[in-house]
Image (cartoon, helix red, strand yellow):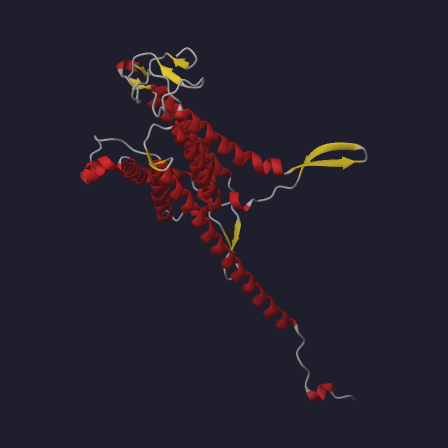
Length: 332
C-alpha cells in the first residue's frame, strides 16, 4: 500500500444542498467540450466541389451547426441500446437465463464498445433525414469523438469507476476515503484501467493530428546551410471524409483492446475477455467498410473518367472542319 498511488478526496460535492458526483460533472463537461470542438470543426470545413459519376461537379452543402445538436441527440437511443446489448454479451451467463432482464435498467449497466457503434448508426440516420453531408460530418466527428472518449475515461477516475485488476504495482491506485465509489473494494490497490485507456485514446488522437504534420517535415539545403521546412499539405486518403472516422474507430478499438488486458472481467476466449472479442468484430467491420468504400470510390472515379473521355471525344468531333463538297474541292 505504501508504494501505490493513494487518493484521498470526496467523490461528491453539495452545491445548493444538492449532492452531485464529481464524475458526473466531469463527464458533462467532457460532452460539452466534444460538442464545441465538433461545432468549431463544422465551421472550419469549407464548401468543396465534388465530382459526380457523369463528370459534372456540384457544390457540397455546408455543414449546419444547428444540425449538430439533432445529430448528437440522435446518437443517444442507439448508444443506450448498443450499450445494453454489449453489457448483456459481457455478462452472458447471467442474462441468458432470463433475457428479459436486459430491458430492466435496474439490473446492470451499459458497456461502451457497441454503444459507440450503435450510437454512430442512429446519428447517421438522423443526419440522413436532415439531408446533411454524411461523409463530411464523419470527417468532423472523428477528432471530437476521441477527445470525448479519452477525457471521459479520465473523468471516471473521480468516481473510482472502471478500476482494473488488484495489484501492488507502483502505478496502481487506492481510494482511502469512504465512497460512494463505483468499483468494488476501491480501497484496495488496483490498476487504473480507466486512466490507462484514456491515455491510450488520447495518444491515438495525437497520432492522427501529428503524424501527417511530421511526414511533411523536410530538411532543405541551401549551399552549406541546412534549414527545416514543410512540404505542401496533402490530403491523406485514410484521414479524409468518412475514412477518417473509420480510422478513428480502428485506433480507438485497438487502444481499448490493449487496456482491456488489465480489466477484472473473466476471460472467455483464451486470454481475451468478452469486450475484446466485441472489439475484434468492430475492428473487422471497420476494415470491411473501408475496403468496400474504397472499391465504390474507385468505381465512381472510373465512371467519371469514362464520362469525361466521352465528352472530350464529342468536343473533338464538333471542332473538326466540315467536309467540302466535290465541286468546291475541284481545282479551278
